[in-house]
Image (cartoon, rainbow, N blue to C red; front, side, top):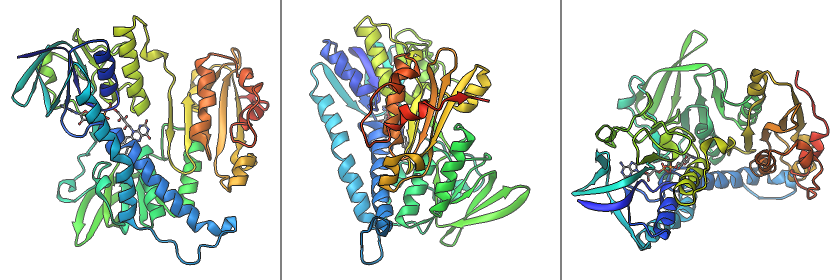
Length: 458
Ligand SMILES: Cc1cc2nc3c(=O)[nH]c(=O)nc-3n(C[C@H](O)[C@H](O)[C@H](O)COP(=O)(O)OP(=O)(O)OC[C@H]3O[C@@H](n4cnc5c(N)ncnc54)[C@H](O)[C@@H]3O)c2cc1C
């Protein structure tokens, strides 16, 4: 039995940072990783997808070169092997760097293998049994594989296997019209694939306001992505070189035929093979580990951080989990999960920057509110860049004047959203932002301007 002060399972977003803090505080710790150091974000999530999206953007702009007075002289073509090589080169250094830095940490022992609880304080990895009074679970999640008839007989792709694709799928069928599915859909359309997105719900990205969903659907369709909402998949099968998806929509049964199938209908936490029963750690019906406001599980001495606790599904929420745990354990600083404000982005082009409540949520809350919107076509910076799709929307509490939420769908929306987020964290009235002098010409300079036009939300 090998004894440590703490064991960290998983080296995604929260694990390595916590390991560095604990080791710096003089703790003897063990870190366990079963596969890729750096987890989803570095290897099969954020970094590689945004790198692919950058290649797709370059292809898109190249095709639009004439709009900018630039002659390309010939057809724009995409070399998928080079696209993958660029992605690999951008991703490459991070996982190695994380592995090296953990192995070099004083007081930290790194184990490579699958971790499984064998008791409340004990974790088995390979032949070794490790013991600690404090155990931090950061095991993340993986693509959800739904029980669709025939799926077990058909080759399919997930966000992980997409990372090995170095060819152009002639026709990519994407199951799922949400964040991950739409990013891949647009990127592959721009690479040159035919792309069909199948979504069960009546609209894409159903958590967003209807006007946001519609605007995203509009620009994707304009680029030639075939979007099928309200469409239920009945079964899938392989016919020769094709993948045939039998669907039902509006009571009508049809088939969608493609060359490749990507599953992007959700994630499931990596908690099913962790031996949680042996430790007495509870999970909910989806396998997420319920935690309190300081990320403690139901078992004293065991915490759950990152995607596996169901309190966030982003790199920044996993990182924030690390900060909360470190602050409470090491700094006597009572940080809480409920202190954070919902924020994320969808990295289509144009991107969607989101903070706080949607308009639908504000309406549902019944509070008096104000709303301001501005079309990106009215934003001079967007016109200068030739990227005028989308709109910005900000919601404000009519009484407190605090910002309740924002949806910024437009060029630089993923960056501009931070001026909103920071004012929300400051709990300052929107007038603070309205009176700030922003730099010209930027998209951000229009946020104070649009706030001049706040109207009651009817
Ligand atoms: C395609 C895609 C795109 C994304 N894009 C974005 C984005 O743009 N922005 C954003 O904020 N988020 C994005 N995300 C989400 C983001 O990647 C995750 O929220 C983030 O990686 C979660 O980090 P984590 O620490 O919870 O777990 P993970 O990063 O998933 O890491 C968990 C680690 O634990 C290891 N592990 C699991 N079980 C065991 C075990 N039993 N023993 C040992 N090790 C184990 C795994 O091998 C893995 O390395 C994206 C996700 C996907 C799939």
